Length: 361
Image 1 (cartoon, one colour):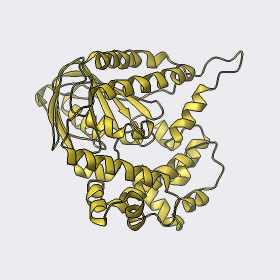
Image 2 (cartoon, helix red, strand yellow; image 1 turned 60 degrees about the vertical axis):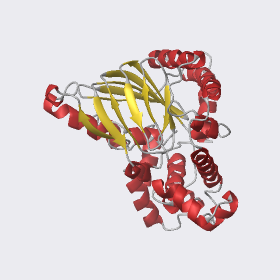
Image 3 (tube, rainbow, N blue to C red; image 1 turned 180 degrees about the vertical axis):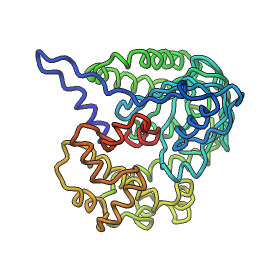
Image 4 (cartoon, rainbow, N blue to C red; image 1 turned 90 degrees about the vertical axis):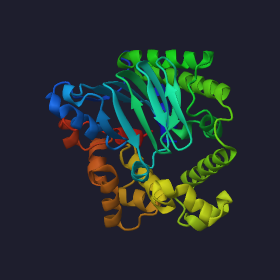
């Protein structure tokens, strides 16, 4: 619903005589102006919320890297130039951020290798490659100029199993190459696009993704793994639809999802448990409401509507999750700085992290 609301807002035509509204500036980070011996540590810290950067290929030569990230409402595009390195996303990352977005990776130059417990594949330059943040992985890449396109599962509720079946195989058919060309052109045009432009480009991008992965899907995973991921996706949908229910918990999920308690706990073990996942989703929903300048309910009512009946406990949990208090988040939204308190917006040394952006998809 949040993505739909932002999409509808972006689709509103500008009033006659007014200039079209430009897209918000992307979050940006660069190590180019840092001393060479500090560059890799700075890049590692910037990426730490999503992945762990293990080591650069040539540590003595520094690590001059840069990225820009646009939040596109249900999707995000990250444009990255970085030297060769290795990295990994662990079960601990998944427990902390609860992110399960798909990622369409497109390298303009340089290959990368990605490994999971069930797959290992090389993504050559110029060919889109799909993986998911819901499972641990480790990777290695050459010097790269690449696009990482993050896609919320909420955009494709009916295609989840199909897209999961297309993971970890380069999309090297005609539709895959067409998708790659589209993403590259989108990255080039975003700095000049208006909200009206995005309102037209976003549906076209979603349609192209659906056509590409539907044609590419095949028996890439064992049947048991495919069934388990389908079951997990269904239960996550149930959780999102029932966040306001005071009876939402393991027992209720077992009934609605038609799974045993042991199956439920096994499915959510990578996320720190089912209770942790439910709390993270409720906090994310609270953050969306609090950071919406059109939301008029007070913070206490928002929290209570999501099952947080103790204001102090809610504030502490919110701060742990987002690094700021609900009150500061609301003040930022009312001041026109959605997603971060004004003092952070003024401090250019503290750019938003990947997780802060991806949580808003």
